[in-house]
Image (tube, rainbow, N blue to C red; front, side, top):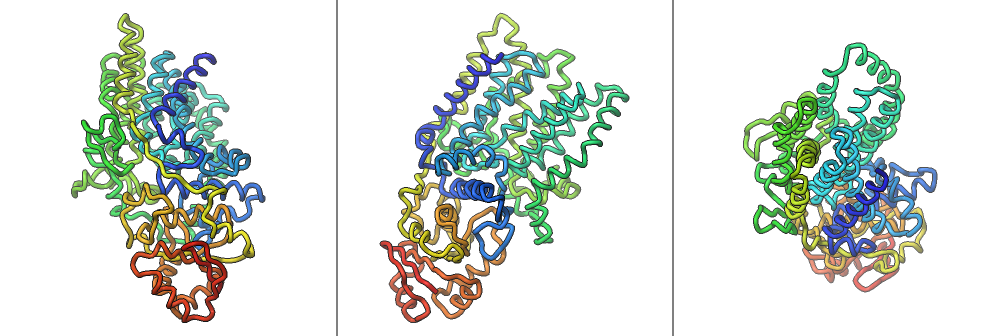
Length: 559
């Protein structure tokens, strides 16, 4: 079996590198896009540097100054940092570390699904193919720009040890069950939220097979270890608990989820880079390509007829997980109509859904459920004289999900940073800076228009990409900054932007002095709304602004 797993891993690595070309050849200096992945490079670096200094300022990062607990404004990436920290320490290259992590999630997801389905079907080849179905599904491939969302490799292992614990008991199974849950929630809070209601399907299915005495024994063990488990989860979730305490009213209104909910056509939609793009419905946003493939759906449904009586219940339970996830992915309303969906009612009784902005991401559980069910059909096929059909099935699936020309954006590294950021290393470490121009995120282009923008081309209308790059560059200078990027922008940031829209003015300079800002970086080439010559002329009217450096179109003023 060890040799089989090794060969399987090598095959999955090969598929990963091939399907993500040319991006997979550029991983030392390029990222999938210029917004979230650029921010994640900063996030991983911050976690690493904080760990190296005794977790100093882990939560209170350098962005959105003077706001605190800024790590909690997005996923903390604790689990991802376990993998990337050694790479960052050795290479000083957060871009390489991030990309290696993204690539390795694919073989890991395949192996995790292999172990789950092998335990259920006892058929290695069927399980290996099911692992490929899950790992290289469109909902995973479309999320390579979202580290939290692509970190779904732990989910099959959670279900594996949930089933094993209910069936076999053993503290080891319970410990591993909690470990995979902790890794899932530390990778993405969404997974921790979604797992709870979906796991109930498996719990009910498995518990009906057990005697009352066995269930009581299992429950006693769970209760004994509840307090230590809760303590660990509180530690992992403390940034969000603190955020909730500091922002008592913070909650995603249902209306905010509508844009990021699935619609029916999403399940026949693929990425623009998909080989089937001309035949399907290619969409530009990475939240909406959810095509599960005809191959996997057909095999999953056939499990209702071609699975033995003993195995049918578990196959049906995973189909139920897929069906429930499918319905919940539509969010509160059916395909942008006013028809209320199950998500609407679950939101009323399950408070954790108030933290979810993108219901469509639950679609990964659709793929998990149908991949398990498909494994049962494959196991039956492979036990007949028609076993060679499995190769054709795998090839058809790969054709359905294959990508051509996965895009990338080159990102400046330590050795080719814009010179102004090297200059910041020479100023006092306790300095606070601000970078201009700056706009509210709602005043710029749509995020889709900014995704592939290299730094040399960004302007003030690229509100997301511009702040993501500035956040990333702070990896190399470490200074506290008014600027920042995250999933959540605090009210103090919006206030700062509003005041800075008048820069240079008495009001803006007074605000900057109040916030102890000492250095102002003005990027002349990034101005669009007004010519920089006008801004420069206004700056000369304020003697308290002293130019201390210039690097091409980048000016540094000391206040």
